[in-house]
Image 1 (cartoon, rainbow, N blue to C red):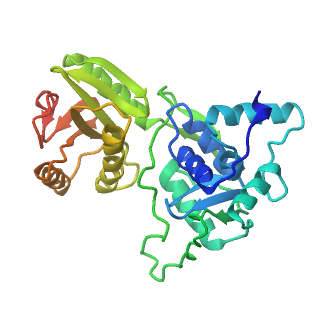
Image 2 (image 1 turned 90 degrees about the vertical axis):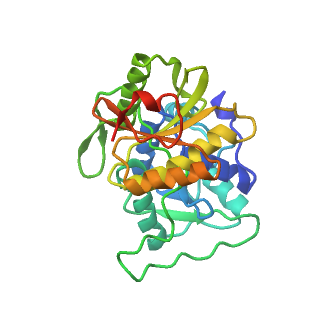
Image 3 (image 1 turned 180 degrees about the horizontal axis):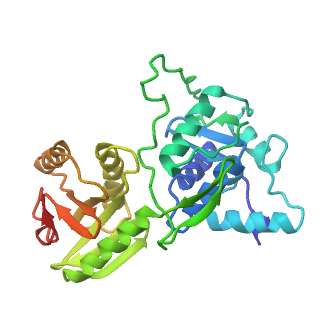
Length: 315
C-alpha cells in the first residue's frame, strides 16, 4: 500500500530523488509543473545545480506515480505524507542532512531562474524555505550574489535537465498565481513530426519515450538514438550542451544498450559555430549527428555518415 512508504535515510537517497524530479518523463512533466506552485519547502542540491520539493525527495525511491498515490491517499484520510518543518517528511530530511529549513532570498531567486529555464514558468510560492543538500559532512559554500546584473546566477541551469511534456499535442490549462496559461507541448510536437518523417524515409522499430530515450529507430541495419531539445528562449548552443550530456549517458552508461548512431534534434536552426563544434567532436571520436526541424521539414548539415542525414534537407 502507498501508506507503507519509507523515509529517506541518507543524503544519496535524497540526491537520487532530486535528480528524478529534474528528469520527468513525458507523462510526468505536468505533475512536476504542478508542484512548482504548491511547494514552500525545497531541497537545494548545489552540487548538481537543481532543486527538489520536500514531499517528493523525502521518500525513498520516490516516483511521480507514487507521489500521486500518496497525495490521493492523504486527501481521503490522515496520513504520514506531510512535509514542512513539522511534517513527517520534512523532519526526516532535516535529520538526514543535520540542518533546518531557512529562508534564503538568494536561493529563492535561483529557484525562480531554475523554474523558468526548466519549466518555462516561475510560478513558485512567494514565501519559500530551503535546506541545502551536502555531500557527506562537507558543507557547501554559501552562494554569492552576482555584482553584475548581466552575469549568470551562481546555480546554473541543470546540465542534465530535460524538456519533456505530454505526448498529446493539444494545449492544456495550468493555473498559476497570475493567470491561466495554455501550455503547448512543443517537445512532443517535435517528437511526433520527427517520427512521422522516420516512417517516410524507411526507418523501422520507431519508438518514443522508451527507457528515458526520446526517440529511437532502426535504419540501414543500424540502431539510432535521438535526443530532442526545444530551445525555448535559450540559445541553440545551450540546448546542445544540455542534450550532449544526456545522449552520451543514454548511449554509454553501464547497463545501457549500445547504440550505433547518436543524434541530437533541435526545433531551431543551429549556428555555424554549433556544427563546427560537433565536427570537432567527431575528430576526437565523439560522433553525434545534428538535425533540426522547421515546421514539418527535417534538416541536417552532416558531420558524419549518419544513415538518416542523407535523407534530410541540407542547409
